[in-house]
Image 1 (cartoon, rainbow, N blue to C red):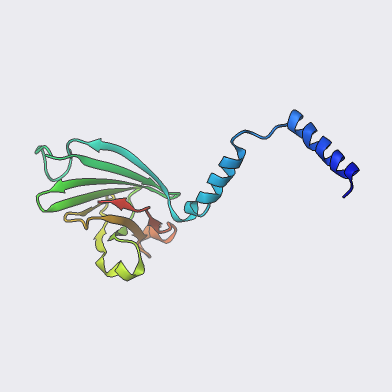
Image 2: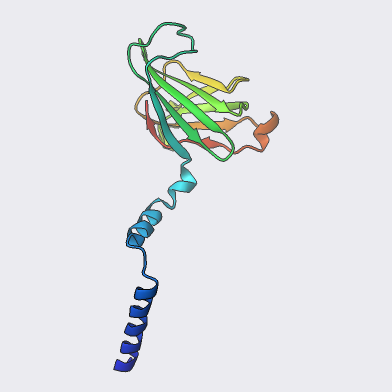
Length: 166
């Protein structure tokens, strides 16, 4: 390129910068979007609902819990999952609810095929409730697998949560 071309390109860049400047956070926003691009395919929406002081409406009845209970909510394209994690005398308990209620198998355990044999299994009942009375602890994921050939399970995809601590 010659000097005239360089001057012309610089004049055009100055004109665009004056008339239509790029947002100040454009570069950071693009980098952040690229960093999480693949996460959207793997993870569903995850939110901390609230710490809960008592576990009302479960088998403990009116007994107050002595430690905090945490509620988490996971949302996918087909359904939502609410999970409550609480302390028990024997360790940790995980109660879950799927909305809408569908016949499905729930697996709880660590990520990775090598550790698949350590996953615990439960089934959601008619109300979409499932439980792990003595849940495995540490960083885990929850797999929800619709039961094939039993109604809506044929059209609903499997669901995998992001890792969370029990």
